[in-house]
Length: 266
Image 1 (spheres, rainbow, N blue to C red):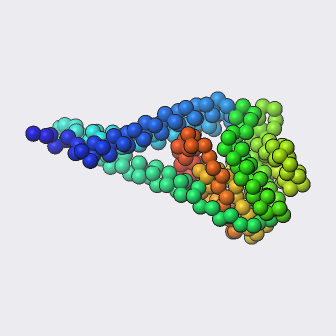
Image 2: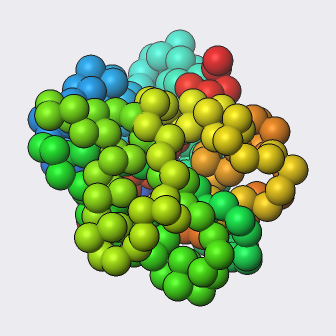
Image 3: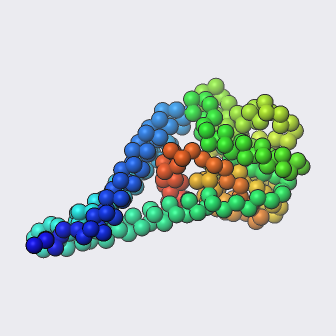
């Protein structure tokens, strides 16, 4: 006779799939974020995000283990079993919240509202060992294609986090675009901000907040970037998400979840 705690075939399959996905996500986070922490200048900030990402992975791992093995309700005696049910409820709620924010990040990157505007804002990304990351190059490719489509638009290049040599993200983007034939007269630098919120706060003093602006950033960053722009008073926001690397997407998505929750707490 089967024990009541033996999972059904559906539960076993679901649990196995969840465990596989969470383990792969955790491995990706460890590989991507440990390399990034060693490559960027603001190591402390990225190290903190890395720690919180691991915490999120642990919560999801506990959820997957509970689905597969009834992890919390196998305990005896009854008082421990009741404690297990309470822990299960907490893990389920936390996992649901994580998945909700992940869904926001994913869906936000699927929305594109490309249209003509006088200004297009290209959001920066931390330089890695003084070089632009692949996702930053993808943002620039998207920006260059936008300029070809709308020749009257000016690009506002953002990012004030300098590398060891003193070059900011915005300056690196300007140099790359001018090398590709974009006239420097079409490029405006906002090279003082260290966060996305600060980007839009500074840009608000450079352009009218009531005029249409296009935000160009990586797909995983688009939801938070658009929200930050709205919070700074921009009323006509168009989104132009740039593609991002497949392998690092999970780590980047969880980074956005961490920063989303941080914004809510603050």
